[in-house]
Length: 213
Image 1 (cartoon, rainbow, N blue to C red):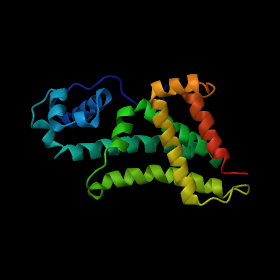
Image 2 (cartoon, rainbow, N blue to C red):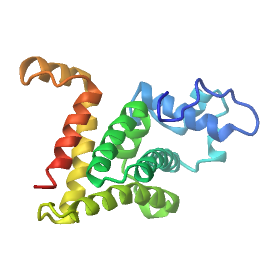
Image 3 (cartoon, helix red, strand yellow):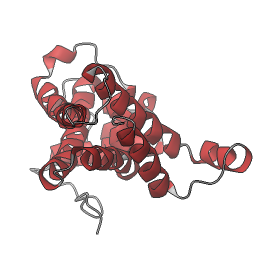
Image 4 (cartoon, helix red, strand yellow):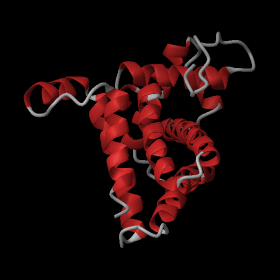
């Protein structure tokens, strides 16, 4: 069973779960299109509700985006927290955190898209989003710091290592999501490294090993 808990199918709309129906409809729009296709009017059409219904829960598109970002960050953070609690070895844990990040992008592509492709005009307005974002990064931050505290660790600025780890798994996730590009690269530029999970395992393992001598 997939590590990510995800209900099958979409909930039917009835009084009391309008907010959940709207969120699911917004994610459906993002799976099929781009952020430019997402609006409260399009959301109402997708959910099969009145044009004014979305405004009961979201004052504008940015408020909706903030909620989607928060939901995605929370899912990612929960998955990373599981690894934090289960894996004592920081080098192994760092690799597993990276693989979980790549897995998240694959399982929740719409969340991943909205989390990183839309910049909020007033980020400070959304306190809950701040909290869940910080929680996710703290898992990475703590693990990298533990790696750099090992006796055989390289002398690397912790901030550089933390940002490097994030950049590595984020870039890897984006590349792996572009299937046509990956096919082209495998056929014309480098030896086939295997399927998605095998590539993620090798690349994240390479980065973790680079922190020690």
